[in-house]
Image (cartoon, rainbow, N blue to C red; front, side, top):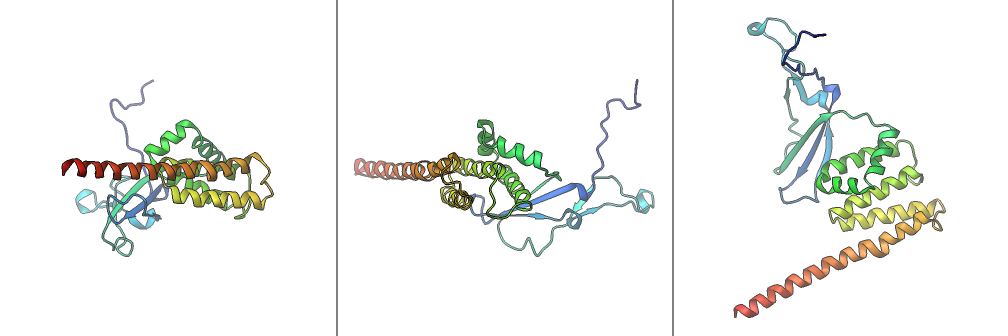
Length: 223
């Protein structure tokens, strides 16, 4: 049965309450590790366009979803690169957090994090906020364990080794606090400390020394 519409897709109505705005600031485009990430209140920065005398003379919005983005000068007052990410507001619940932390520990999740670091980092922060609202800072659960492993996998992929070391130390401290130092969870965390992070550093050092050696050889041949 026909609905009366043919070849036309009607845009959906959107209100500021349905929108999440994430702001990322860096001093330069080349600086990918030192950045500030925060959220903006969509209801404060999104202003609708209303009809006027020329478009009907009513105070009704011209089109639901057509807004003017009014950025606050007190938050955009530094020289640098500002990136705004607008997306539908996410509904965070235990099922989504459990799914995402598990996903980030799979091969597909690792690949996703490598190619979409900013998005993966933001989603893990949302997971962390959800967990922190329901647990004390020194609590442990399977969900918390999955979050730490997911965070470490992401940091490993982008070679943020110092942050990885700090997160792993925090993870191990929680395991000790909960008397889990004789479990497989602690063994895995210890492996990150003794193997992964150490070898990452070692490989970077070897690569650095190789580049120096290659440059020295080039200069010697050139002379």
